[in-house]
Length: 291
Ligand code: UDP
Ligand code: UDP
Image (cartoon, rainbow, N blue to C red):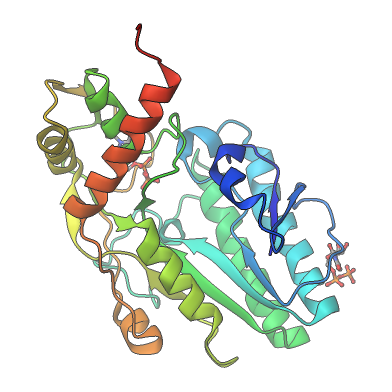
């Protein structure tokens, strides 16, 4: 197992428990540069996914998705490896069709603040399917909907970790807009199970296949649930809605059910409890209490 990361948003702490494993190898590398290694399977997850991180250097974000997938496809072609591309619900943009089936082409602004991520991932999908048609690469695409869980960065900036950390530290819970916008949150273990099942499918199964938990919540409901589960005294406060923020999002997972025999096992309450426990531990380590 070779883990490749440039650590722009990833943390070494998340893999320290694997470093003693003789089957695990770590390589600090940026996928926008060619990579010459010998592998059987490639999971291309490279690209920051939180708006604050992918908008920090938008040009580099597009390069990471586009040049990254070109390099991973070139590698897959040379060593005859299978490649699984982590695409995103963001390919649907601010969707007009609800819930979103894989056939929907999306409603994406090509020149906005989110475009570096959305269009980068869309172009990566184009490249995958062109390599499949042109070079007969065994490739697979999953479109990942909002995922959360332990080992997220304390300052990830996405809604679940923000709300949990705010609740645990007694800070205000920052709802952007009126909180009526919706998301459907998938626990990380469910996502990983789905990606491994996808990798194990026969070559005809290229996808794209939506992976997410179809239970939809408003952002306000999420804030209230986090307060309830943490027992926090934090208040909800309302801040401006970022530009082009999608109003609704829910995966249609009929394909995942049919092709992978998969559906999420961990619902939001249970997943949040595990995530809260993780951040609680982390915060205790970061801010040691006086003896
Ligand atoms: N590539 C890579 N590792 C490899 C083989 C290729 O990173 O093991 C890169 C290579 O540098 C190129 C890209 O993948 O930029 C696409 O390779 P491909 O062979 O498809 O195209 P070409 O080299 O003909 O442009
Ligand atoms: N959001 C929020 N408060 C936060 C962070 C995010 O209300 O502290 C909102 C954000 O505006 C969006 C939703 O929560 O409507 C999900 O945002 P996130 O950045 O987690 O993911 P994405 O927008 O990429 O789905």
